[in-house]
Length: 144
Picture 1 (cartoon, rainbow, N blue to C red):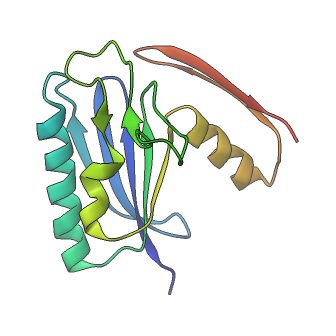
Picture 2: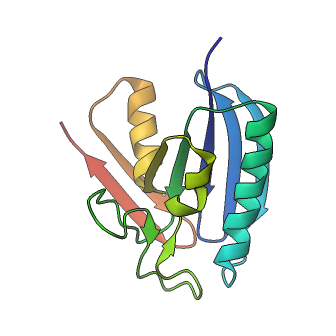
């Protein structure tokens, strides 16, 4: 039996939270519309849902793909934070810290890097280009 993981996609206007096995079979999906003026309420609602799901069927890790800009430097005091975003109420919000008490490893990436890396990994590639157009727009390219 494969392990269970949780994924959070925090976009510019909405969040999606899903529970999946490590083979990519979704077992639970939940959608939450982000109210950009209340980061605390949004993160608390996601946290509480994940805590409930973890009590029902434990998961082993959380992956977070987040709008930015974000701090990805694991040695930084603000690792896991949304930093200088223009979104009111979301500047310097500790996204990763909101889920630490769930006591599982947390992987944190941008909402552009994460899908680019996933697409490449699923195709068995080491290079990829990715363009996203949503509330904002961004590109990602990595080459090996």
